[in-house]
Length: 250
Length: 248
Image (cartoon, rainbow over all chains, first blue to last red; front, side, top):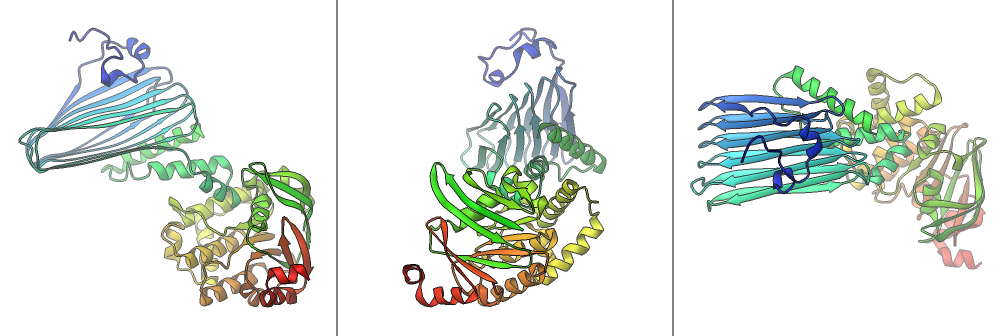
């Protein structure tokens, strides 16, 4: 494929994207390459908070060598189009952990796309994605896990939950598995829901105004995504950005 | 304090309350009893402002204000507390967080000074102690994993912290064993039996009324109050059954 050709929606990984916004920054720069050497641990994070109306695409190609691990935290909240992609290859006995949150409103299109390849035996991976979408926003998680023929004893999970604040918002969740080994544990779950009306009435009956009640429930929904960010300053910045975005939405 | 006049309502178009009138003055404890399906819980939810409990006629005046003009959270700030028959679980939100946000929301609405962390913890400790509830319970998510009895105790701790003028308690006695019933009864008395407060107890059974002695007992049937009396009416109902008393 010619890298200069704008993708079309026919390609699965672009099906829910905003190609008009993409065109404004096309062609996007080459992906960021992260290589974690054997036995090493790498902590990565991305706070995608591009300005209103902008388009931002962040592509990562991550190679995790034998016995190494990579923890990636991503908060995807900015721009007209905010897209973060991961192409991960796992070595023997290595681990990849992705914790991500998407919080969007207006006409935002926010996406996390991942392709995790268990190329060698005994590797593990976990992906936890929480999305909160209001107004006419679209949030998508498309994640494929590919287990090679030799990658026995692979253990992988994907947990995807989306919360819609308005009937006009859209969540797409598409966990996908392609498995060629026979001794493999792969778990995946996806749910899309709304704020619990009974909880909202219970909170109102105790005096909480609707905005405070909604914010509290939504904080609880995304809590945990950034719990294990190693750097306290980064963690605080992520939490502040997430809460700021939430408060603007409710 | 609360005057309900000819209240009618409907849930999804079905009429439940059919002209209910009741006056509760400060310093009084009223009990409403009645058979299943009489509209007892509907009365509580309608006064609390639960969505889909539509008022179709009549009025409810609370401390001089039209209750139905207020949103549910404004009713709470005005001094109304609704005790739930089935308290709602809220995963991920601790009791302390829930109560501090609730209390401070009420205080903001009334133009009062909000409590800081230390002040709030002291208040929570005092009220939890009153109901024999461990502070560790209050650090856990709201009602998640609580037994039936713990949920009802937690509700009374909430009432103690929020310090309402009028408490409407919907079958607070259901799911309680004898010991818990005593503790909850004592809690209601300690928090609410005051000259400037009032309680509306909704119950199926007489047993809670052994601990929280009502000044008035009303029988709700077919969507309206059909009989009123003193504490002795509850004993009569317990002895004779609703059918007998209503037929008499």
